[in-house]
Image (cartoon, rainbow, N blue to C red; front, top):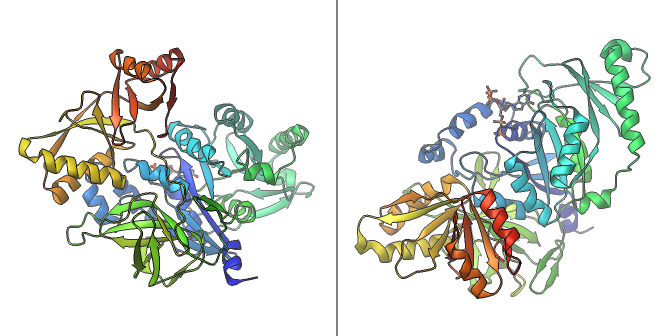
Length: 528
Ligand code: G4P
């Protein structure tokens, strides 16, 4: 096997999708702990403190090092090179969170065992689902009582249309969590709460179902309940289908507790076995195989450096094929220019390090002075271009106002460039003629970043006037019908930077009634 095929085969590039507070930070820390990337999972606290500094993101940036929108964590585990693409969560949720999923080969859907699928989970799932990304499910916080597991998985299936295949199953005795049953090995992993609150790895006791001690270890009622559950699961009779998993239709499901490390290791082991290594990607010239010796990659995120001392930006590039070597010359396909990738960065845990080489599935950070845009292809293989990264519909909208009307030109230039870069989206009302621009973002933090950059990079002090719209849909159909939408209550018609029409809605109700009523039109939550 060639070096490249070998490196591809051992890579796993994934992201965690979850609603805030489900335990993503905790699970991330634990995966790093098991991967040996950090020794004590104690930095969770520091990060959590940073997380709450909602408006003061400059401070967040200082505390968290390079990036508000965070980075990529790479670790080795059992001979595999694992890339965990960190998806911004709380206040720093932004369009980058969605874009990051485009760079991942699989995803782990993390659920709180009391809450199941929540709003943010649903939004992120939709992005994965559209791309048929294979999804694992980890039901977290099992150390404390949660919803009935069968009910929970039923809800996932009904809500998302995703079938869950339980690999492990929780065992409880009354309110007490006893352990998980592994359906693969037909063994029970016994839960014991560690002394150090999960800051080090745990060794679990494992017993078989017919172990003479099993009744004593888990209690008669828990045993009986487990036997019933196992029978029920087995009777459902579904064999796990790796093909259906790879098509994103069936999700191998695990129960555990990130906080106490319980169930993390069996999950990680199975994850490494099932998760796909980097696969082919569609490009303008056809399919690009990761083993192709020529380097190719695409930009999926651009991180503006907010530190005035370092005005450069970092473009995050997902390597799609070939062997990347520092200093190599590639083509920036959109502009046709050659670029030397001199000092790329890799992200190991929270440190930035310079790297010499990278392989398909890896992410490299390229220092950039404003040439690169989201979706751009870098190629050492001619003019091929990867399919662009979609624009996702924003959920927050504001008019953007300036005190000094003489700055209007700078404002327009700034908004145009920042929207091209993907920092926020800009819309104009249908009666555009120097009208007040509207900016749209997926998360509130994008607005803070936008205002900061307008001021520091374009010399425009602007302020925002929030609008009450909550949903946006691009609309396709006969122009007269689209125009007729502008008059409705609780909605407005706007145009994006490419003059494509969108409707903003103030509630789910207006969105639903409009989309149901307008038979000649189609509505899209991703730019068509
Ligand atoms: P997030 O990144 O998804 O937002 O979640 P995060 O890991 O920050 O966890 C959110 C809260 O859930 C934290 O509690 C965390 O300790 C708790 N948590 C995470 N995993 C588990 C688990 O397996 N079991 C239990 N019982 N709790 C879990 P917090 O109250 O916000 O902080 P702290 O007081 O624990 O520091």
